[in-house]
Image (cartoon, rainbow, N blue to C red; front, side, top):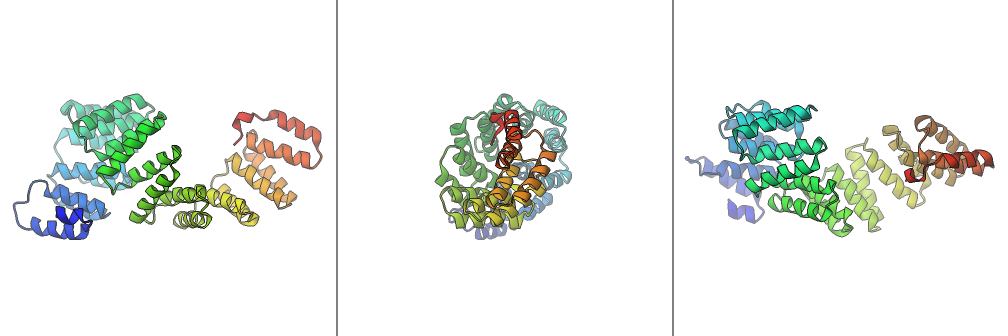
Length: 360
């Protein structure tokens, strides 16, 4: 099995391991290894079924639960938790913390983690969950301490490395964040969230080519990953590969037609190509989904001006001003339009209202 995994033939590795498991007794760690293979193959339903078939095996339950939570597969994680029947109070308290966190009760989630740690002060999963809740509660230093404790207990804990990357990135420690994300992916090459965030932090550090490689790897594993398509589009756009960028944005929109981020990026690309009509159409679509973005309204109004559709520009401005009356970007295009129509006093008065720090 290990030889086949090293060669990248995970289906053959799964078949070999299942054959061995038919001959009891099962070798120690064999079920955990099978869970890892199924995760790598994205066979999440089969992995959950395996856990349910072995209700007394806490090791494989904890591994799959922590993976599902790490990948933000909250519904699947809650379903797995709902079917668990462990008497171990530590496991029960962590499950309770996860349920409370997903339900928005962060105070209750922290209390449940602390209860778990009273039963077992060396529970890496409990520290990882505590770190997640503390981070969501706005306490990065305490969160970082919890993740570091989890990793001291379990250095190969990919999800904890990934979570530590979040905390470090939030504190603008981008070099350390990149190392944490990279370690999570090194430990679990199939970890989609790890690859995505490694690419994002590489973008933030100006490593655009390396970031693009991360998104390409992620899309090779999961061609329907919307965020990977959007970020790959941004990477290709930066590198002036406009057709590839367009492809990724369009794929993201096909997969998620209401994704206003993908719509805005595609509109911007069309605008740069001077395809004004297409840019207007996609900015309009994005504003239907999220109408409270002043910079997008400003882009749309300026496109109408570019196309010399001043009546449409005025209509869009009226709509934007109704929704965002004090937005700096909307005020800016309002002042410009007033000046274009020779309404100088109105233009000057509007310019004076603008807080330049809020302009995008």
